[in-house]
Length: 230
Image 1 (cartoon, rainbow, N blue to C red):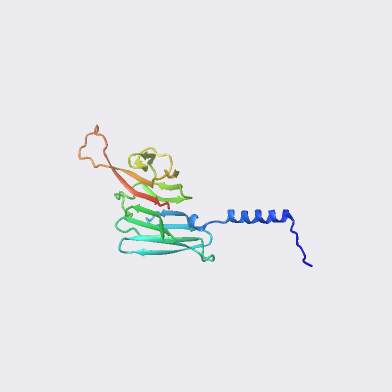
Image 2: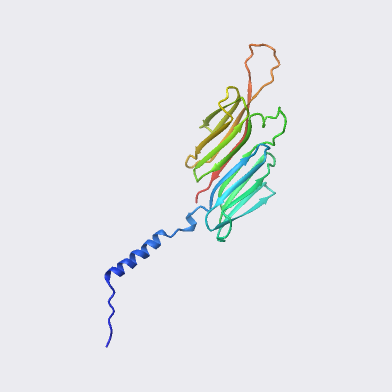
């Protein structure tokens, strides 16, 4: 005698729905950013560093290519026990810092800084106005710029639409404080660029009281962030 087993229809439907939900919620690691966020900083002594976070279940390695002065950050899937946070000191070489970020050997981001070593001298153009700053990338398109200036420095935020550069103008004059924070949104399809524009006074050869003050614009530091989408 052959036994017949009858499964309730509701159980079959429930099983199919459960499988469908599991498939739809499965994360495709290839579509997830492994390099999640970063913060690049310059302290009051002029030393640079970068702190960054990687995705859960990912790990990072760093490598310095001396031939082209590039700091490589390589992020890979796997090694779930690895720390999600990392920090590295950066060195200015030829007044530049280059950082290239790779995810599973594909380049996803390029970060550049142009600056000059701080000289503890009152005549140093680099140390005249800006004392320290940091740029933090919260996600793919949002950034927070924090910085401090010396007393008596006027700060004006502007955007150079011809060159796609966010500018922070620093000039001796009426001051509204020494600590500032600015939130930036990356324009779709364009790199993020931020310049600190210093107004350096020309030394006048004339003693005329009616002579207008002249300035030379000196853009340092300059920060750039290019994101590659695949």
